[in-house]
Image (cartoon, rainbow, N blue to C red; front, side, top):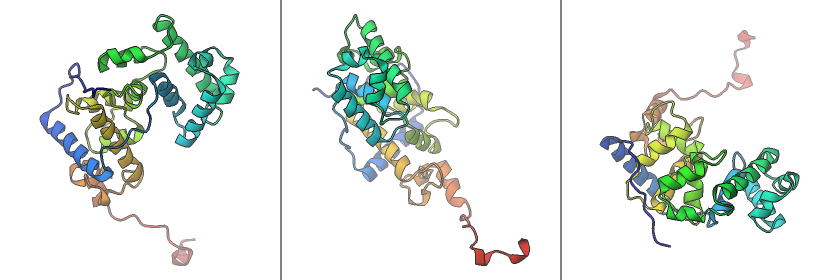
Length: 261
Ligand code: SF4
């Protein structure tokens, strides 16, 4: 498959100093987490879409098991679409909220079929620009920017669209790559616009993975390990964290003041 590069977006202007900072963060975290990072999936786009829907707020092992059971129970995605919902729900029982995810998956598969002239396929997305392909996917019920980007990037389409998960979002916010208070949804366009316009799918994937890994391994929601962080000098939040006085641990029984009780 030829290497696809990211087309210029429809026009979020990014100041040069912010672009330079985003590039520096990318380079340092890439060194830390050893880019290029191998893609974890090579699924067709519909399978990737279903896998992505199953993974919502679910541990990877559980959503993987639900996906395998679904594939084993039904011969193809059309059979999943047309099955009694209770059977789909039973097949995906290992993931969270199977009672909500089963009808949602069926509704989305039916919508793809209806939007695509009776054809249950997403292969036509390969011929669209990333912007057009995202808009097509996001016109389906319940598909937002994270899922549309995941389908385009993680599937064998390998298109340069940036998904932003909660770890990635937290790290970007603390580094002030996005303004305070910007939610995950709108952060997608802002962070994608900071990447070089000719980014390959591998570059975009590395960017997603390194920011996510950093959020999982160093930049924890509570008590981030800022003193060990390779981007501390670029991070206003981290610099405030390291200036805080050390946290006091709870006093042991023997150290408690007997006068206080
Ligand atoms: S310095 Fe601290 S808050 Fe900033 S990115 Fe690193 S771990 Fe996160």
